[in-house]
Image 1 (cartoon, rainbow, N blue to C red):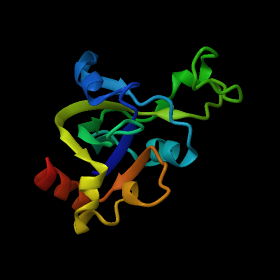
Image 2 (cartoon, rainbow, N blue to C red):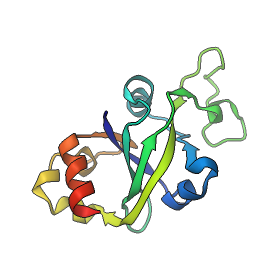
Image 3 (cartoon, one colour):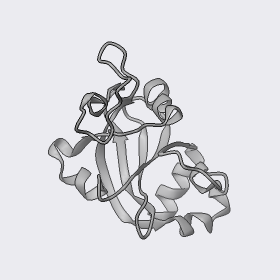
Image 4 (spheres, one colour):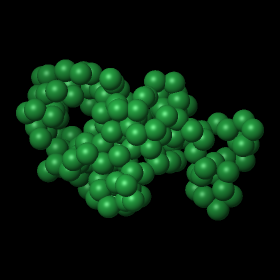
Length: 152
């Protein structure tokens, strides 16, 4: 089992949206970074834990826990000319962008980025690295355990 931090803008898909979605599941659409795509395509597996992180909002931070609930499959937004995630170079025969589904597990009081920075046990988390812009980053088992046991 692996662990991940997955960022979502709450006005696009929040932890509350996930909790109220049919089957409490959403496709993780719109990833347009090759490294993040590769994590979903090559490494993520059903059952992996997800720290659901609200980003690009007044107070970014961890808002809850989800779980990877599917294997990777083509992101349909890449084929839709009306989508902001449309990719003219992607074809159904050779899709460039993949996604996984995530299922809601738990909402928590927001754990702000500043609160994560306060703990030496989390000093190496990728989300805390200067210049980190990836929407999906691996989380170690030790980081996962500290956050879920001491901050939630």
